[in-house]
Image 1 (cartoon, rainbow, N blue to C red):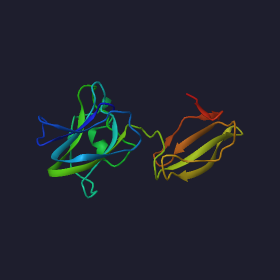
Image 2: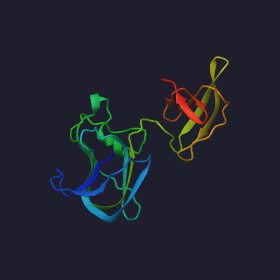
Image 3: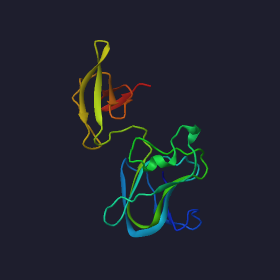
Image 4: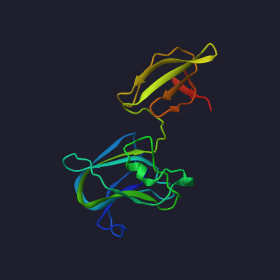
Amino acid sequence: MVNAVFESSKTPDFSKTRIIHKITGIPNLYNRVILKHPETCRYVRYKAPENSYCNVSEIVLYDLSGNKLEGMHVGSRGSHKDLGDTGDKAFDGDITTFYDAAGPEESWTGLDFGEDKKIATVHYSPRLANIGIYERYEYELFCLMDNSWKSIGKKTATGQTIEFNAPKNALLYLNNNTAKKRGKVFFILDDKIFYYN
């Protein structure tokens, strides 16, 4: 996402644009940008850097009152290998889905507000594909004991980290029960995590 931009426009073809924010560093899981000068526009888009697939999980825009701005999706058509990861996924409210463009050439995803709106804050998340810890998601840690996987317990994340008490020198994996995604098998040695392929 480095060098990607959020742009505003008065026209649907984005023939004239204004950059309202440029991503200059590697983003965190959740990113919040308060615009120094709120931007009034009808159209807004996230435009990928060169030779990328516009990978973004979530974009949320807010006005000066903190209200979420809604609109009709606009942007590049299709998805990589027609897998269904289309541009509208960046605005679906689900951080585990993402936009993966049809090709590495210029790609973008955005919104048509239907009328001029004032953008004050931009929230965005990079493509994650269910990797990481998401607030309000349930996780279950499994441990290999007696040649079978046993559940150590379930917890719902209240932030971006989650803690379990696990035996030392054991093989483990973390299941994201909410997203129904199983993590890789790993073990911990000298406070470092090692994953099995």
